[in-house]
Length: 308
Image (cartoon, rainbow, N blue to C red):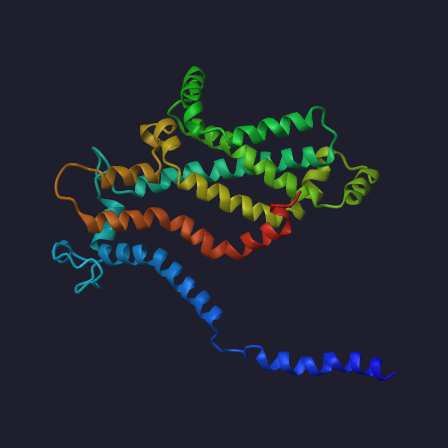
């Protein structure tokens, strides 16, 4: 009896000691200080270039020539932003990067919608319907996701030229849709793999067909993964340079190509404030998307974007 009492009493005597050695809330320990130091250093590493860009874009050229890179503007001005948007030269034309902005919008919106629709459709079919050769088809799609753009560039140019789509808006939309299909299919297939099969079977028993189940059951349940897909596709397509340069044509050049023409111009004075303003304007759309939809992105990933 005494031995049993001693055994039971030992953890009681150890527990207060452990509680006394545990760090209190708000107390700085070496480990916690190391974590804060790492986070502050990482934040500074990413925010310092942004600070330099914003500060430079608000300075007149007279201040920039002084060489004080990290100094705040003494006489802040938004004229470089106005010039970058409306009158900067992007080649032979000097209408600013607003032309490229609207071209990017016309490219991103249909490419995102079409690629997500077909990606969801593929993922739904591969997850619930016993499609013949489904495994091989999925393998081919995944193989296409890892093939570099440069390998398929010339065959795609010849193919689009043969069907009279090269250098047109439908042509660049088709290219982005095709290249986005593997990743979109993977996202939706893995998401639908986490949906209980009994739900699909119940819909089949109720008389639901392929399209009815897809539109009335699967798509309404797919909001988290649709948000993830929208963020990924819009960001990738908006930031694209090489595909827009090759396939968009002279009349549909996206904002990234227009930005390259602004920065790399060899005529006249190099206006660093205008260049910085144009760069920030070009990256503003993906940044706003992440700030607004970041929480939804995390929820979508947690809801099944990497499952399966």
